[in-house]
Each structure stands twice: as structure tokens, then as C-alpha cells.
Length: 119
Image (cartoon, rainbow, N blue to C red; front, side, top):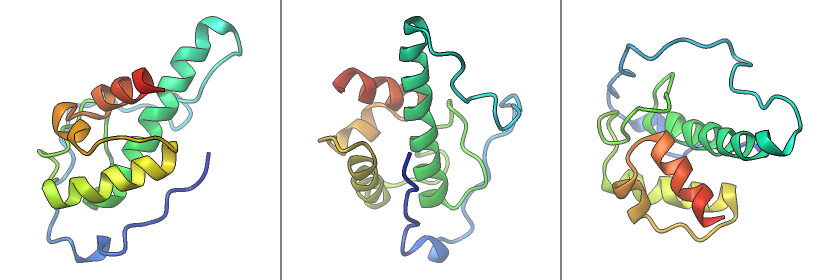
């Protein structure tokens, strides 16, 4: 997986809201794909989508953590930032992803499912 480049204006964000608490903490490798059976390939692929989306959001929103059920707009996202995030996701997934997807699928998990369905 390629590293997502940082947002050029990420340092200018004013006091971004902190991540909502209540998400269960997981060890760093808990989301890593396990095994190589065909039955796990779909889950591993979905996990990859979630990891990339969370990283892009984390950098764009200037927050330390983004969980699968965090809402882009409740974390401080807005329409101009959604444009930049959509561009980063298009680049990361090499796919034609309309910006509207961020508005229609506001959490990492929902957006990962929607992107996986288009793949």
C-alpha cells in the first residue's frame, strides 16, 4: 500500500475537534488481514479500504485517530475539505469516486463498503 501524501494546508486547520471517545481500542495489528483463504479475501480488502480512508481523513482533519464509525462532518469536515479528501481517495484507490460519496456515506465503514462495491 502506498503512503498517502500529507495535505499541504493540514497545518493551518484551526483547533480541529478531537475524535469521539467510546470506540474500543485495538492493538495496532488488530486490523491487519489474517490468513489467505478466499473467505477472508473480501474482509481483508474491506479492511484495506477502511485503513486508507481513515489515514486520509486523519491527515485532512488534523486528528490523532479516526475510527470506522466516526462521521466525517462531526470530526470537523466540510465541503471544501471533502473535495480534497475525494481527490486523495481517487488517487489512493485509482478509481473514479464522486465527491458526493463522502456526503452519502459519512463514516469510514460506510464509505469503505461503498467504494468496495464499486471496485
